Length: 153
Image 1 (cartoon, rainbow, N blue to C red):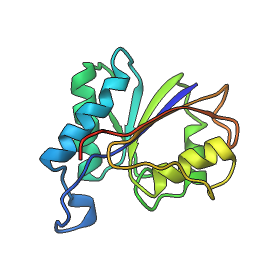
Image 2: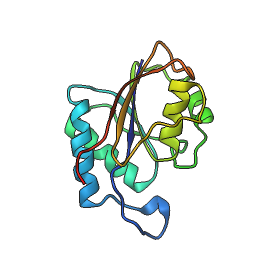
Image 3: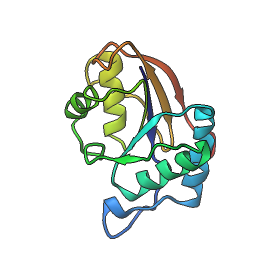
Protein backbone atom coordinates (compact mmCIF):
# COMPACT_ATOMS: atom_id res chain seq x y z
CA UNK A 1 0.00 0.00 0.00
CA UNK A 2 1.26 3.45 -0.95
CA UNK A 3 -0.28 6.34 0.97
CA UNK A 4 0.60 9.86 -0.16
CA UNK A 5 -0.11 12.72 2.24
CA UNK A 6 -0.26 16.24 0.80
CA UNK A 7 -0.88 19.36 2.81
CA UNK A 8 -2.57 22.17 0.88
CA UNK A 9 -0.47 25.05 -0.43
CA UNK A 10 -0.21 28.46 1.21
CA UNK A 11 -3.66 29.98 1.73
CA UNK A 12 -5.05 33.45 2.30
CA UNK A 13 -4.63 34.61 5.88
CA UNK A 14 -8.27 35.66 6.15
CA UNK A 15 -11.62 34.77 4.64
CA UNK A 16 -15.24 34.68 5.82
CA UNK A 17 -14.43 31.32 7.45
CA UNK A 18 -11.43 29.03 7.79
CA UNK A 19 -13.05 26.58 5.38
CA UNK A 20 -13.38 29.33 2.72
CA UNK A 21 -9.68 30.32 2.63
CA UNK A 22 -8.29 30.05 -0.91
CA UNK A 23 -4.81 29.29 -2.18
CA UNK A 24 -2.53 32.22 -2.89
CA UNK A 25 -0.48 32.43 -6.10
CA UNK A 26 2.53 31.35 -4.02
CA UNK A 27 0.52 28.40 -2.69
CA UNK A 28 -0.32 27.26 -6.22
CA UNK A 29 3.38 27.33 -7.12
CA UNK A 30 4.22 25.33 -3.99
CA UNK A 31 1.71 22.65 -5.01
CA UNK A 32 3.02 22.53 -8.58
CA UNK A 33 6.51 21.94 -7.24
CA UNK A 34 5.42 19.17 -4.85
CA UNK A 35 3.32 17.32 -7.39
CA UNK A 36 6.41 16.61 -9.48
CA UNK A 37 7.00 13.69 -7.08
CA UNK A 38 3.64 12.29 -8.22
CA UNK A 39 4.37 12.34 -11.98
CA UNK A 40 3.54 8.99 -13.56
CA UNK A 41 1.40 7.95 -10.57
CA UNK A 42 -2.37 7.50 -10.63
CA UNK A 43 -3.51 7.40 -7.02
CA UNK A 44 -7.11 7.55 -5.90
CA UNK A 45 -7.60 10.97 -4.29
CA UNK A 46 -9.53 11.80 -1.12
CA UNK A 47 -9.75 15.48 -0.26
CA UNK A 48 -10.97 17.71 2.54
CA UNK A 49 -14.04 19.83 1.76
CA UNK A 50 -12.15 23.04 2.62
CA UNK A 51 -11.58 25.33 -0.40
CA UNK A 52 -7.76 25.41 -0.19
CA UNK A 53 -7.58 21.60 -0.13
CA UNK A 54 -10.04 21.34 -3.02
CA UNK A 55 -7.93 23.78 -5.05
CA UNK A 56 -4.76 21.83 -4.20
CA UNK A 57 -6.34 18.53 -5.24
CA UNK A 58 -7.60 20.08 -8.49
CA UNK A 59 -4.06 21.16 -9.40
CA UNK A 60 -2.78 17.61 -8.80
CA UNK A 61 -5.70 16.05 -10.67
CA UNK A 62 -5.15 18.27 -13.70
CA UNK A 63 -1.36 17.86 -13.77
CA UNK A 64 -1.56 14.07 -13.56
CA UNK A 65 -4.47 13.88 -16.04
CA UNK A 66 -6.30 11.46 -13.77
CA UNK A 67 -9.52 9.75 -14.83
CA UNK A 68 -11.08 8.66 -11.53
CA UNK A 69 -12.96 11.52 -9.86
CA UNK A 70 -11.75 13.24 -6.72
CA UNK A 71 -13.69 12.14 -3.66
CA UNK A 72 -14.45 14.76 -1.02
CA UNK A 73 -14.79 13.40 2.52
CA UNK A 74 -15.65 15.33 5.70
CA UNK A 75 -13.08 13.49 7.86
CA UNK A 76 -9.93 15.13 6.44
CA UNK A 77 -10.31 18.59 8.00
CA UNK A 78 -7.79 20.28 10.33
CA UNK A 79 -9.60 19.07 13.46
CA UNK A 80 -10.39 15.52 12.31
CA UNK A 81 -9.37 12.64 14.56
CA UNK A 82 -6.50 10.65 12.97
CA UNK A 83 -7.65 7.36 14.56
CA UNK A 84 -11.20 7.81 13.25
CA UNK A 85 -9.86 8.66 9.78
CA UNK A 86 -7.51 5.66 9.87
CA UNK A 87 -10.46 3.37 10.62
CA UNK A 88 -12.26 4.81 7.57
CA UNK A 89 -9.17 4.42 5.38
CA UNK A 90 -8.79 0.79 6.42
CA UNK A 91 -12.19 0.05 4.86
CA UNK A 92 -11.01 1.13 1.40
CA UNK A 93 -9.63 -1.33 -1.12
CA UNK A 94 -6.99 0.65 -2.99
CA UNK A 95 -3.27 0.09 -3.48
CA UNK A 96 -2.31 3.75 -3.92
CA UNK A 97 -4.06 6.69 -2.30
CA UNK A 98 -3.45 10.43 -2.01
CA UNK A 99 -4.96 12.38 0.88
CA UNK A 100 -5.13 16.17 0.50
CA UNK A 101 -5.65 17.77 3.88
CA UNK A 102 -4.41 20.16 6.58
CA UNK A 103 -2.27 20.55 9.66
CA UNK A 104 -2.41 19.51 12.41
CA UNK A 105 -4.38 16.51 11.12
CA UNK A 106 -2.14 15.37 8.25
CA UNK A 107 1.05 15.42 10.33
CA UNK A 108 -0.67 13.60 13.19
CA UNK A 109 -2.03 10.91 10.85
CA UNK A 110 1.42 10.40 9.34
CA UNK A 111 3.00 10.15 12.78
CA UNK A 112 0.36 7.67 13.89
CA UNK A 113 0.98 5.45 10.88
CA UNK A 114 4.79 5.55 11.17
CA UNK A 115 5.31 5.63 14.94
CA UNK A 116 2.07 4.12 16.27
CA UNK A 117 1.16 7.27 18.23
CA UNK A 118 0.54 10.97 17.65
CA UNK A 119 3.36 12.36 19.80
CA UNK A 120 5.74 12.51 16.79
CA UNK A 121 3.75 14.11 13.96
CA UNK A 122 5.32 14.48 10.52
CA UNK A 123 6.59 18.00 9.82
CA UNK A 124 4.20 19.01 7.07
CA UNK A 125 4.71 22.56 5.81
CA UNK A 126 2.42 24.06 3.18
CA UNK A 127 2.42 21.77 0.14
CA UNK A 128 4.65 19.19 1.85
CA UNK A 129 4.26 15.70 0.41
CA UNK A 130 4.89 12.45 2.26
CA UNK A 131 4.86 8.89 0.97
CA UNK A 132 4.17 6.08 3.43
CA UNK A 133 4.39 2.42 2.43
CA UNK A 134 3.39 -0.80 4.12
CA UNK A 135 1.53 -4.05 3.71
CA UNK A 136 -1.56 -2.57 5.36
CA UNK A 137 -2.71 0.73 6.83
CA UNK A 138 -1.91 -0.10 10.45
CA UNK A 139 -0.71 2.36 13.08
CA UNK A 140 3.02 1.98 13.59
CA UNK A 141 3.57 -0.36 10.64
CA UNK A 142 3.98 2.10 7.76
CA UNK A 143 7.41 3.27 6.62
CA UNK A 144 8.15 6.87 5.65
CA UNK A 145 9.67 6.71 2.15
CA UNK A 146 9.57 10.39 1.23
CA UNK A 147 9.01 13.72 2.96
CA UNK A 148 9.42 16.54 0.46
CA UNK A 149 8.91 20.24 1.07
CA UNK A 150 8.61 22.84 -1.70
CA UNK A 151 11.73 24.94 -2.12
CA UNK A 152 9.84 28.17 -2.78
CA UNK A 153 10.10 30.83 -0.10
